Image 1 (cartoon, rainbow, N blue to C red):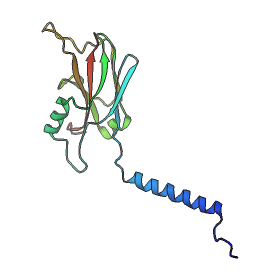
Image 2 (cartoon, helix red, strand yellow):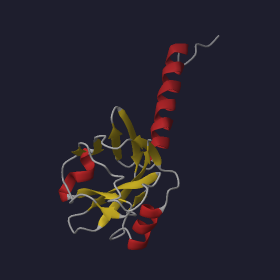
Image 3 (tube, one colour):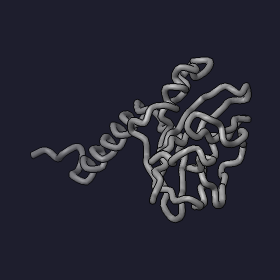
Image 4 (cartoon, rainbow, N blue to C red):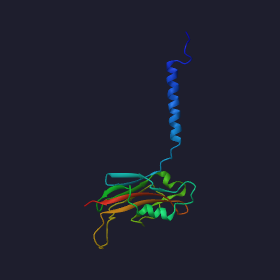
Length: 165
């Protein structure tokens, strides 16, 4: 009769170590998720990864791609907004690392200057104000655009603000 070279407990340890190693190998092949941007209205928040992003090795995000991101309503996170609510915007710290900044864009028009803060608050903002020019739209497109030190776009996060009546 021969004795096993590795005991049952040892085999289980080796199997577990192999499973962990295989899992780490699979995870290392995945792309790192983009940092999140968050929009908060009242006590409701929605977060999203960047919809558009500068490709690795590319000098910049093309103007055409940025425009496409700003105008497309596909697959955007939606949040209800009532007139006079406080609108809060936030980005993860890595968005403003290395001299990068971000700015808010509403329906394709910048509504803030580029900022290196991770959080902005707009108390009582009426983003659906029409200035007496007809009825307010049912929704507006809100984007957060990350810009590099050179001022060129690097990432775009998109959200839809839906007017709550």
